[in-house]
Length: 120
Image (cartoon, rainbow, N blue to C red; front, side, top):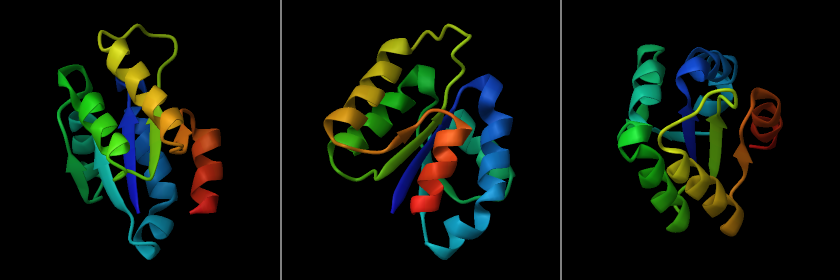
């Protein structure tokens, strides 16, 4: 199973904490993590193996969207910061739209991500 993890700057620490809380599930289920570049770097520093793409503003969200469209990504956990404006909003909306088009589970906050992790 491949899970994409993405977090806006103000949510990166929260993503690392979430992954630490679910590390056992991630290892037991042999889950492959993919990520946008900056989030991936933070996650790597926390000890997780992750395949990093470009940073979100440089196309990382679009790269993950391609994997969704190709049927390679099974789930997306995207901790968004809804109170900030992001220069790559079109890419973010495209990624979210493709999750809907291809019926890929998408969590945009820790509460929903928790429910998805229980279903893995």
